[in-house]
Amino acid sequence: MTTAIVFPGMGPSRFADAGRFMLLNPYARKRLAVADEVLGYRVAERFRESGADYSEFAQVAFLVNCLALADWAADAQGEEPSVCVGPSFGQKAATAYAGSLSYEDTLLMTAAMARCEEEYFREHHQDVVTHSFTRLPADRLAEALSELDERGEWYEFSGYLDDGFHLLSLREGRLDWFKKRISELGGYSMYSMRPPVHAKSFAGLRELVEREVLSRFTVAAPRIPLVADQDGTVLDSAEGVRTMLLDTFDRPIDWPAIVTSLDGLGVKKLLFSGADNLFRRLDRTKRAFEVVALSPKTAVAARR
Image: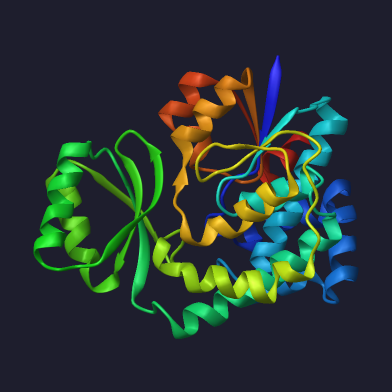
C-alpha cells in the first residue's frame, strides 16, 4: 500500500497541548535539542512563555513536533511513506522531510519567515483576517460574494478545502456581517485567522521573504515526490520546491487538487504527522484514503 505523509497546516498552538510530548518523548527531545542549539534559545520555554498562537516560538515548536512524530512513526510503527505533502505551514516540515533543506536550515528558515510575517503585517493589511467556513454550496457562496461586490468590499480566496468549504480573506470590519450571511444561507463559520494567509494581495510578503530569507538557503531537489499545496503539482526539482515555499504567501491552498494528485500517484493511506483538526477530517480525504492521525496527544497516550 502506497502511503503519503501529510504535515498539516498549523492551527492555534499552545504549550498545554504539546508540552508534555516535547519534554518527555525521546524523539521530540532529540529534535528539540537541535533546535535549541541552532536557534540559540530554549524553544520549549519560549513557546510556553509566548502565549501567542502563531508566534515564532509556536511555529518552531510545531515544526519540531511534526518531524518528531514522523521519527516516532518510522521507528515505533514501521511507517515508511513514499510521498510527502504539507498544506500551508506544513510545507516547512515537508521540505525538511523530503530532504530539500536540512533540519537545521529549516529551523532557521521557519524562525526567519515568522519574523518577516510579523514585520509585514505590523505595517500592512492590519484590518484583514482569513475566515474559514463550510456547508456553503457554490450557488449560496456566490450570493454572499455578490453582496460584497455590490458594496465594493475587498476579498480574496485563501483556500479551497472541500465541497462548500473555503478560506476567504476579507476586511475585519465586514467579518460579523459575513458570518451572519453564512449562517442565513445555511453555512457554518469556523474560525478566523490573524495574521491572514495565502492571498494574492500579500505579494509584498512573498517578495520580502524571497529577499530576506530564502536568498540565504540552498534548496535541493526532494528525495521523494513532494506535492505542492497550491495546485497539486508533483515536485521533483529544487526550483519547484523553492517556488512552492514562496507561493504559500500569495496563492490559495487547493486541497482537492492535492487529493487528485495523491490518487494519481497511487496513494491509498495518509499518515498525518502533527496536530490536525482539519485536513484529515474533510469528507474528500476520508472518502479517498485510509487515514492515520499522529499528534502529540496520541503519542503521549501510546506510551502509557
